[in-house]
Structure formats: C-alpha cells, structure tokens
Image: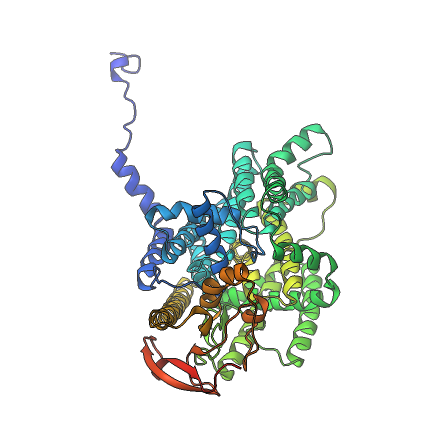
Length: 580
C-alpha cells in the first residue's frame, strides 16, 4: 500500500475565497448596519442638505471657516464659545467642493455617518449582536436631536461623532484579554480632535483613566504613567497647543473668556437638580423604543435584579420621582429644555413670529409621561445590572469594557454643567453626547433578554420618518427665509433694515457692525440675538411666519411643509411708523 499521507503531492492547501466572495460575505454579515447607513445617506437627498441658509448660531463657525480660508490661517470667531478649531479645519477641507453653506453642512453629515458606524463597532466590542448593534446605531442617528443637528454646522453633532469614534478605539485597545496601545493612541488622537471642537473633549480620557483606576489596570508607577500618557496625551497636547496659539496669536475669544468665568463662579447646587432631572427625562425618551420593545419580556429583567439592585432601584427611583414632581409642579413638561426640538418641531425658533405649533398640549403631555416611563425603565436596567457586592481583585476584575463606557458617560454628564452655567439653562443639545453611549449600555444590559424585533423596527421607522420630514420642513423654511431676505436686499433694502432671524441677522451684520462701531437699537420687539450679539438692525422690514403688531403685510409666499393640515406662509412685513 502506498503511504498517501507521506506523499507531498497529495497535500493540498485550502483555497482562499476570491476577493469578491469575501466582500459579499462581509456585506452579508453586516447587512443590518448597511441598511441603517444606506437609509441615512438616502435621507440626505430627501432633506435639502445644500440649502443656502445658516442655522441658528452656526453662522459663527461658518464665518470662522470663511475667514480662515481668506487669511490662509486658522481663525475662530470671537462669538465662539466652543474651541471649534478642528471643525473649522474639517469644514475647510470640504471647501474643495466649493465654499458654501451647503458643503459645510455636508461635512457634518459625513462626520455623523462615521460616528454612527463607530457606535455600531462599539456595540460589537461589547458582544452585542449585529441586529441590536445596528438598532442602537439607528436609534442614535435618527433621534430627532441627532438628526437635525447633523444637518447644521453646529459643534454638537461633530463632537458627539468624534466621542463615539474615540470611545470605540479606546474600548478596542483596552480589551480584557489584551491591551493594544495602537488603538489606545488612535483613541487619544480622536479625543484630541473632539477637544478642538468642544472643551469637554478633554473629559473623554479622564473617563477612560477613571475606569482604569477603578478596574485596577494601572498602578501608581512609571509604566502606568506612560500608559496614561498614551490615553490622555492627545487631548492634553491639543489643549496646551490651542491655549498657546490663542495667547501668542489672536487672543482668547470674548465668549470663551466669559464661559470660563461663568463655569468657575456658577451656583451648581441650584443648577444640579434640574440638570439631573431633565437629563433623566431626555434619556428616558431616547430609550423609549427599547423599553416598548422589551415590555412583554420585562419580567425577565425584574427576575435578574439582586437585593442590592432593588435597593438601587428604590433609592434612585425615589430621588428621580421627587425631582420630576418638583419640575412638574413648576409647570414643566416635555420638552423641558427646548432649543433644537420643541412644540414647533425640530430646529429652534429663530424668527420674530415663528412656525405654527405642531405638537399641542395633549401630545406634550403624552411625551412627558413617556419620558418619565423611559426614565424609570433606565433605572430598572441599572438595577438589573447591579450584582452582589464583591471585594478586592474579584470586584475590580468584574469591571469590563462597559465600565469604561459608563465612566465616559458620567464625565460627559459632568461636562453639561459648565455650558449650562454659562447660559444659565440646560439646552437640549448639550445632552446629545450622552445619547449614543447610554443606548449602547442599555442594549448591553439587555443581553439575554428577548426584544421584539418587529416592534423595535416599526418604532425605528416611525422615528426616522418623523426626523427626516421635520428636518426637511425646517430646512425648506430656513431656505425660504434667506431667499425672501436676499430678495429684499437686492431691491435696495440694507442689511441693517432687515430682521430675518438669528442666523441671517448675525451672518450679515455682526462683523460689519463691529468694524463700524454700530450697536443695537431700541425696537418694539427684542429677540435675544439682537441684544446678545449687539446687532444694529432697525427692523424696518421683518421676515416672519405671520403678521405682527405695528407692521403691515407687504407680501406673503407659501412655504412647502409636508404633512401639515393647513398651508404655511412666509410674510414680508414693513413697519407702519418710521424709526425715530
């Protein structure tokens, strides 16, 4: 008998799959997230992404990009509270396609797409299955706040996207089995980018370091110090470099100086309870689709709660209930911190006479109840994750990658306090960085608990439909405002005579007013942006969504608004009496 095993000619190496087959297999394996990303990209063609209009106060960052390109050097506008440097550079890169308000908006949409993909990867790092990881990414991407801010040039969506990317890199580099410094350094670099968008980016590595200390993965010695430098070196260098650039170059913008002063001297005791309560409500509303899809299996969550968990639930529930009752007693209801989402829909109210109300008192009451239900669902999830107490090394060893994400969330929550102190109110967009990581942790806590996929997909579809339609309507309206105001200007009306909302007013009059030494004038109406930015607009003409006392209607034009019962019109109004 021939020795077949010993014959080299009989040995065969396994065939490698063709590149095309491997690509198809990869696409099939990740089909759920591909559906989400495809839907997000497709929606950008439904929304008028390239609309020629600045939005709210994103004109400050638009002017920063324009001036940087004109001067061939980095410039951050004096009204910028955020550091914004990376966003200015990122936006300038997209100017190769033409420097327009639309292309700058595309730069943020691109970052939001990358952040959504990173969130999916973060969920996979926590061993969340592909469907739920994609659902988490979709819940974040199509959340009304996330979605509308993704179609602006505000700093909130870029910062949150960079936060997701940095968290993914950190968690990937800090896997329990092996530590990969390359991924950690990548996370540090992205965290530095986030720091150069908003100041609280520096809190990302602080959250990671907190996790490392609690988990017992670093000691107080030289190797650990070097390891911590790989975690936080990027944001540290970015902060030092940005500060040095300001001191040696253009100086610190006025609003950044006041931001630091307000943050230091704020009364956080009075702010704290409201910020905590509002945060719980908004996070509860963001997680509501998960809660409803889990409702039939909620008993399985309850049965997993330990005695320590029930103590946690009772304590946190009582505190939250007390704070919510106090908030409701003061006449509060959702949206508790209206800025970019409210009764008129998504997007802020930035006209003298703004859009018609879309969400009436009854709907807002339902949303308030839903937010409270969602908040207690989150408390229940936290309680189910609390295990019997451990001590020493076993307790530290039990803290996995989810602990790293939780530490980052806690520090980002702390990061909402300084901007809230600066403006003396918590704005809804300040909570955006908490949404993706909290949703990820909720899905992580529900591993092993059945979620009704059909219910979740249906709710996701409804959420996406609402966000896309509302964002489309808002951008169409803003585009119409600018079109009408530009028509007035072409007819010979000066910029200082046209009141057409915060973005139009600031973009067209602020810089020239500072050069000429002009200041705000007394008007029968006084929106915040006129006195806050000291804009010399006399209000001879007003662009609004309805009539206004003391003005007569010059003309009106219909504005396309999908799924509105009544027709919506844009009015050009002229003041009845001349400016004294």
